[in-house]
Length: 338
Image 1 (cartoon, rainbow, N blue to C red):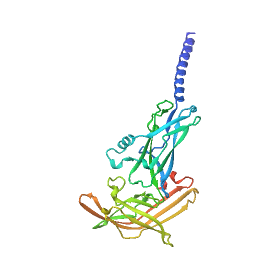
Image 2: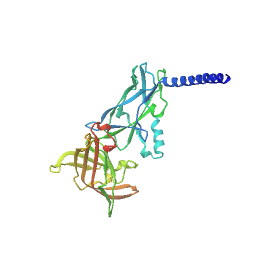
Image 3: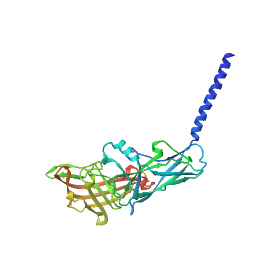
Image 4: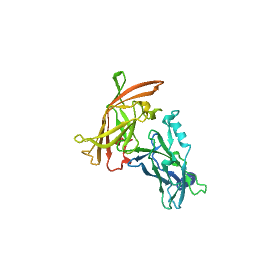
């Protein structure tokens, strides 16, 4: 009999403990927090792809959520602002003492967003419209827009304390038909007096200037070089047909930095073609081939007070795999745009 009483007593005590734990869990579930919904990559930023077509204007709708298992019963007026210290922290965490790799805050003239947004009662989310207008943006820099959900002084909502929920770091990435990651294996470089020693880059990134103009870093410069802005070569895809039989169009090529002593010896051309995949009916293969590139330039910064002359000769090409079910802004890495 004593054993039965002990078991009953233990059950009553245990049940009370479980009820207490369950009440605490329920309280947590009833707590509602305001959060951004983003998908940050390895650098802690969320890429926003902006096509440059006539202009570089694009509206990005950033989801704002009310979390919790219960229905949102009130209209919630949520405030937003820039978070000034975010990029300093992110840059040092990701790149240390490499300032040439740092993200820079996007200047205010290139974006706008409402400082307040109402999430209506009965709704668990709303969209914060961010208007990007990126005409004239220098694509040689890595730009980012750090936003935060502001605390509410009146206590009508609570901000989610987690890092990537209370803050959104958006990185606008411009693209056009001719930008992206091209194969550079056919663009061979030689140093003056060393014609037998050739070099190339397996991949060369073409960056956006306008809807028909791109630039790339000449020689072996990449976006990891501090002096990269001095080594830009520009390509303009004119749309003027120069060979009807081969379906070739003209390319203008130049450099703006006179210190490069840039000199072209050819009239480059390009060809655009595409075909649908034989088995995957939604998949489109698009090709761009740039031919007949031939120019000289000098590297005037690698060795102090000394110029090294190079010749670059050959072509660039890209093969894109595009999912026709998606808009261009949502294409994956197989598009070779990013």
